[in-house]
Image (cartoon, rainbow, N blue to C red; front, side, top):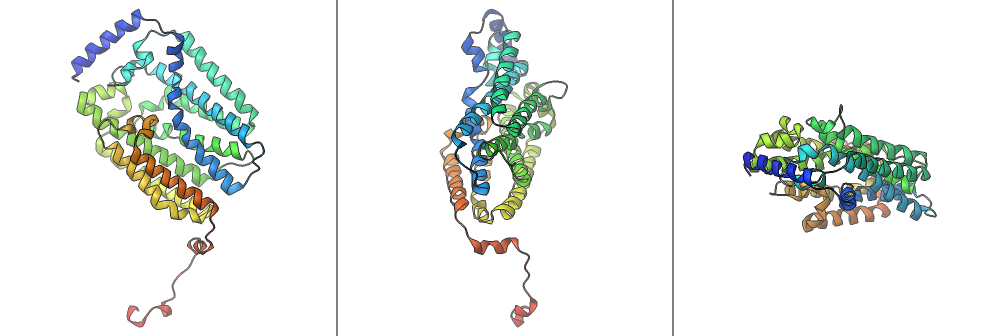
Length: 341
């Protein structure tokens, strides 16, 4: 769509916003309940906490149920403030200009009240799950403010936008861990691997958006949608994805060797998962631009299912022979054949 056409479309939308009043369901749509699939990143925290800590399961079901409700409530609060504060810039996006905050007239008072209600409910329920869970839930909420609200608004700064948005991944992992074992925190190596892995996902999303939107409407319209794109190129985004993947792999390797060496056998499947997602981000109109729809990719879901299955199996299968991988060992020269010396 040419820039002139986009401008005309925005004028029409502005007129529509002035003449249409939102209903209750329109306000509720700001919470993006359809994005709840992103909380799949909570599940590894549950599995790893159980496999590594072996906590009691007596109160696990109610804790897990309440924990997911908290995660959804806090995430919904972040989505509400996100969509409201992005309504002007989203008007320049080829698909996001259909969002409720862009296409309808909303009352600021109701929007902020809705945000406060979701945040208060989430934090109140989190307090029932313990101090640590409450603190991490509060960090989850604050991360949304840092990402969306001036004067920080990290989403407008190149590379920092990816790093700050992807912090939601280790936060979700920690929430899952605390649902299962409220007496400990996940290892730092696992959190850093999850953070860098999340940065890889967000970097792939930016790369897909950059390739598609610049081809459709040009770089100027893209930077009006999100200021951070002014500091990106397709090449820099591709390189950043490589760096994030390498960092995630490094920290993941540290975690695997240190805490359960059997997991090292799952590493090829994890690498395949990274490759599959990067491949998807290269496709036109990729689901990488809308992670909540990632379940629509059979290839990605098959790769993910196999990887999760392998990790689950290795969580309960002990392979003592692999402990040699974590021990220092050297091959003496006198053990080599004479011709190799």
